[in-house]
Each structure stands twice: as structure tokens, then as C-alpha cells.
Image (tube, rainbow, N blue to C red):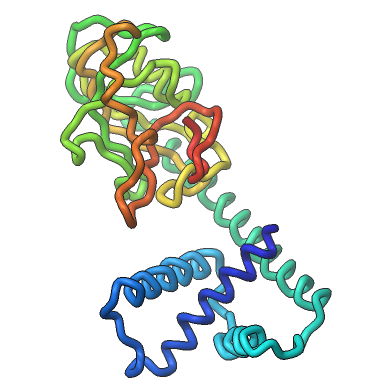
Length: 268
């Protein structure tokens, strides 16, 4: 099945690349033409991210022409499967290397960050610093909290923000990633803190969305606005990962707990 998906992806890339040889004849006026371009663009980006930037567009076009013209295959199924397996294995090795590099970079970031006097490190390895102190009550594991937050990678890339959406969210303290479960219970209502969450307290070696690579250290600006009991929660304020993204948007990398996964791979 994975080889079939790879073959389909390669075919789509080939269709786009073949059209690039005669750009003057390609029009992007109708919705179908624009959608076709978008499919090719997204697929091309995906293939590039997987290191498949050495595909031969002419060979892809030849395969498409043979299939449409109902001509005999120029290569046998076994030979094609061998080629697909090679590309898949190469992509997996590349991802493994990137994951290892991300893990080392995250460890270095936390080691350096933990030396700052403003930062406290808990027994679990969670790091935090209080930006705005308050004396309000603290939530327990069974509470629902109302929060504003912004999540970033260590390079500053923002992957999710309730501030940008303009609406805080209600979420269960025990229904989020371990770093949030611990961090929320350290907070007093009205406080603002920064959380520096090791990958082992976030998504580990999984990538919950294209915005969050595997083994990522996550940095959150987190503001605790209020505490509610379960029967007081506003169920209409769904957590970001439960909201369907607008057309063309990636699903948010919200701090959902490990458990069942949506189609993007994010647990919720």
C-alpha cells in the first residue's frame, strides 16, 4: 500500500513537471486548472521534503503515456517494486537522520536554556519561567482550564496560537500532552509563563503535523485565565486540534494528549 501511494505521488509530480517544459501552453484560469496546479505544487513540496528531488520527469511522462495509450509496460512489476522500495528506504533513512539531528539540537537547547537564572527545571525535565506572577487558585488534574497560548519551535516558528485566532480555549488539564499537564498545575490563575517542553513530554519521536517535526522541543507562551469544573466548561470552545482547518491550512499542532490520532497523526 505504501508503494502504491508512492507511485501515485510520483505520477502526480511527473504530470506537473512535464507541463513545466511547455509553460507557455499551460493556463491557470479555471478552478480545475488552479486546483490541478495546487495538487502538483503540494505534491512536489512533499516529495522534495522526503528527499525525492532526483525524479526524472521524462521517465514519469513516458509511464503516463504508456498507461494512457494502453501500451506494454517497459519494466516488469518486480523491477518497479524494487525501485519503489529503494526510494522508500532512502526516504526513511533520511527521516531517521533528521530525527536524530532534531533530538540532539533539542537536548542542546534545553541544556543551554536551563542555565538561565529565570528558568526552573522540574524533576521530569520540564523547564518554565514565570513571565507574570499571580496569586489565584491552581488547577487540579480533574479541572477544565481556560487558557490563551502560542506554541513555537525552538527556531521561533509559530505552529499554533489562540492569540492569533482571538479566542481562548477550554481544555481538560489531564487531556493534553504531559508537559502541559504538569505545567498547568504549576500555575496560578492570572499567571503567564513560558514552557519549554522536552520532546519526551510532548510528541516524542512522532510528528503530529507537518508543522512539528519529530523529536521537537516545544516552547509555549501560556496564560491561565480561569478554572472550571467539568460541568461548567463551555463545550463550544473546542481545542484547536478538534477544529477542521480551513482549505489549504495545515491542522494545528495543539497540545493534545497521547491517545487516538486524527488523520494528520496528531493525538487528541
